[in-house]
Image 1 (tube, helix red, strand yellow):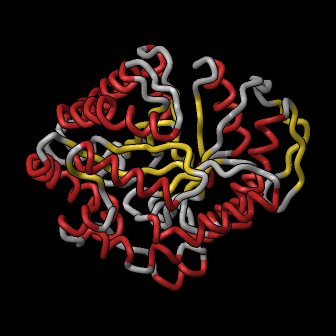
Image 2 (image 1 turned 60 degrees about the vertical axis):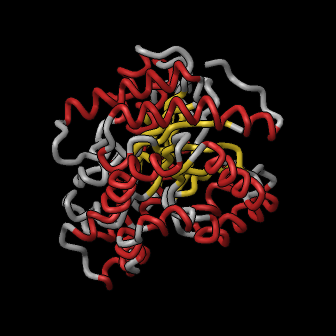
Length: 360
């Protein structure tokens, strides 16, 4: 079992952007010192309350110079807003610069991004995305790329030479096609934060069955916002504002901004964002967030039990990722959660899963 930290880099009033990014860098350094396997950040645009993380290469480039062993992961590169050949070349170079410490995913991105980017919804449609994905994958493994398709035609495009590193590619999302693609290519999948196991059971079952069909191995990453303290009541009090903020930030593109028409979202394959699920999630009472396994808040034993329950039902689970700075949380709270999780939770789960503990 691997353990990692995941951040959306949510920007909330009262904290400047330079302070926000500086704190995230310090949190990456601390995670490296504590022995976490990876630090992951989302790539997102236009909605800073949801995420102010527009330049992951810049963030991780600075972090690489300040750390020794921790890996870095982008969750996810939003492929419709990149030239797939350019993105593949950037990943090759970044992998070389970090000594192979880079992991990444690709995806279509959220359905509310296209219009602020000046792109019609159908420009990020599945046919264009999947052709971009095919071209991107070819460029990851070839020095020279030729491609004839509906959206791209290139002849002998030279990409930065293949670095030789074995990339860990991670997909995430809510559509069946995402899980089929991941299984076909032997890629990992990350369960989106805020969703209990039951919400994605069908997709994860599909992923496992497709892995068996394609002859690949399931590799599932579980992401949850987490806050712990030896005193359960204190943990609940200290975490409440930020867990509420985490959910509100995730829903903010729908609740704080004009939403594309429902028919247009459905036609472009973004029906999830027209379903009302995110808005309902943001309105969840705090006690129900905890009881319903939307967030993990409590003592180390409370969190350990939640992880045990997840391992029991989720065959193919290989990594637990926690978010420790949700909803504009103070820096000291993020550090505290990292420290206590590493000290009290990680050794227990590693021992129970037969893993070898890493030294802090």
